[in-house]
Length: 101
Image (cartoon, rainbow, N blue to C red; front, side, top):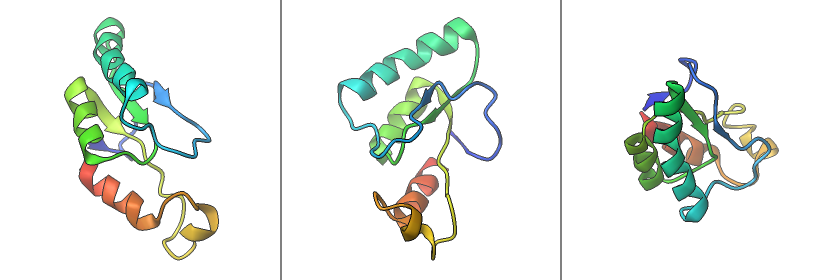
């Protein structure tokens, strides 16, 4: 997967704006995994996901399904991050971004 910042060529088809929690492993995530190759092959676009803070296993599953980009905002400086986000830490975001790369 390519890191965010290079611009998605296709829409963020799996975007959860305003989400407070990531997509957990289970039926919802498996539905996304099944849909990715169908959409990619039918529409012919690269697919970008924005599913929140997910784990390495999920990132690998998305890549295997055909995701080429994963969107993950780093909203602010590490020192201010706790003021705007209480569901996870800046280090959690940083870890996930490094796993994508």
